[in-house]
Structure formats: C-alpha cells, structure tokens
Image (cartoon, each protein chain N blue to C red):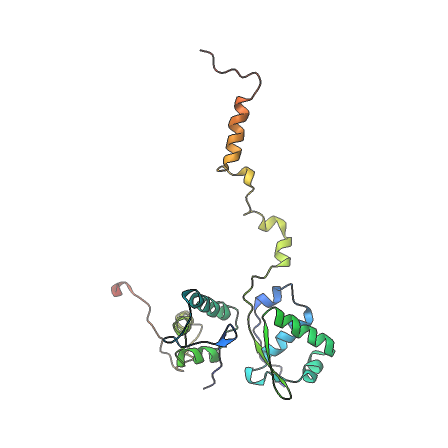
Length: 95
Length: 136
C-alpha cells in the first residue's frame, strides 16, 4: 500500500517509543495532525505511514479514523481495509 | 486528462491575505496532483498556469515564505511538497463587517467590574455641589 511521509519541522516524525520530543512539541504534533486533517491536508497515505511505522501521533490518527467511522462518514478503515475500528464506543455498562 | 473529480483546498489558503492569486493558483495546481507526480519543471508549470517565469518564481517565493511549500532541487526538475502553514491568518472580509463581530468586544468603561469607573462615580457623588449630607 502507498505510504507518504508526514513532516514536523521539515523532518519526518520520529518513533513513538524512541524520540527526543519535548512535551510541548508532542502537543504541537497532535494539534498539527488534527488541524491538518480538519483542513484536508492529512492524507490517508500519511496516516498509514504514521500508524504502520509506529510514529508519534499514531494514536491521534487512530482516534481520527475511529471518529470518522463512528460517524459513518467512512465505511472502511483505511489502514486495515475492513470495517474494524481501533476502539469501541463506551456504553453505560462499561463504566 | 480527465475533468472528473475534485480537489480539497484548505480554507486557510483562501483566506490568507499575504498570498497573491498566482501563488494560490500554484498551490491549487500542486494540490490537484498526486504526491508522486509533484516533480515538475518550471516550463510545465508556466504552461499549465499560463504565467511567465518571473511571476512563477514570485509565487513560489511567497508560498515558501508563508510555509506552504517546500522545494527539493532535483537534476532536471523540482520536487514540490505542500504543507499547511501554522500561522493565524487574518480574515480581511470578516473584519470589515463591523456590526456583526464587534458585539463581543465590550468597552472597558461600560463594564460593571471596572474599578476606575466605580471610583469615579463615588467621587462624583461626594464632589457634587449643593449636597451636604442627610439632615439629622
């Protein structure tokens, strides 16, 4: 599958478990991802690269995908190409 | 080349005052292309956008300065990467509509919690001529 690199400060994102980002930079990455998705600049290929490569911001991408699938805007998970979601919606009995 | 399909353009680009129409057209044309096909010569861009070389270079410079574009030099062509600028863009159209958007801007003198205003009112009461206090 096609994958496209996502850049932060003109450098590709680092791994989620091995990086030298400060907490502020991490927050900025998350905000950037959300803002890019809202404005249509975060492609599915970039999300695929982030999640499959274990890059920082993968959880944010999963949340975005789940949100789109729960709202039934996307029928298929673009990472797995099926209808599975990463998380489930919480119900009253789950608490 | 098919005429079907569509391209998503960020609203931030449309609103941005710092960019010229040529720069916006360049961004839109590059956005229309798939990332793998964003390796282009200047001559191609000039013919597609119908602009001269100096205008194209000016448009590129504007996009680079405003963090919308990164260019990688290749041997015979340039590779273009699109980014979204993280700056706060001022909206010229919205700001000119005074009545609608100035509702939320409360004047300082009209606020109830403005200490200076309260002090002024209390001092005005005492300094009034003819008021000598209540009769006992």
